[in-house]
Image (cartoon, rainbow, N blue to C red; front, side):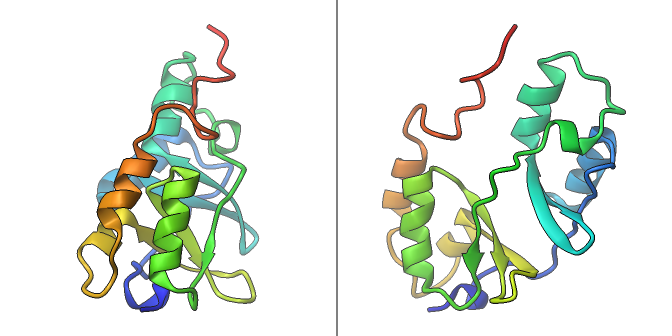
Length: 148
């Protein structure tokens, strides 16, 4: 099964100049914990609810802080024509729950979440992926470089 068959296609994109308050409103409207950040039709980052909590609120940043100051710039992505089971394995290896999906021209076409995979028929390995994602620490630990 291809990623394009299980991904979420309707994706809202924020700008790096939008505020974290605006991004939080977008997340509330779409009932999601992550929003891609784009600039001039190019994906430049991802902002998660955890980024807002750990990189903004915990650091005492104002709600008017631009997303560009707290977003994750190291973007992991997958292609829409990749095998969903292989991407599922990669999510576990990289310890991420959601990943932007791009076409071969690297234009954003969707988001793939662990939930998308879990609710699809024909993709196995979700339990193993969740266990791998849930390991403590890793490259995506947001408290590694924080200064209090």
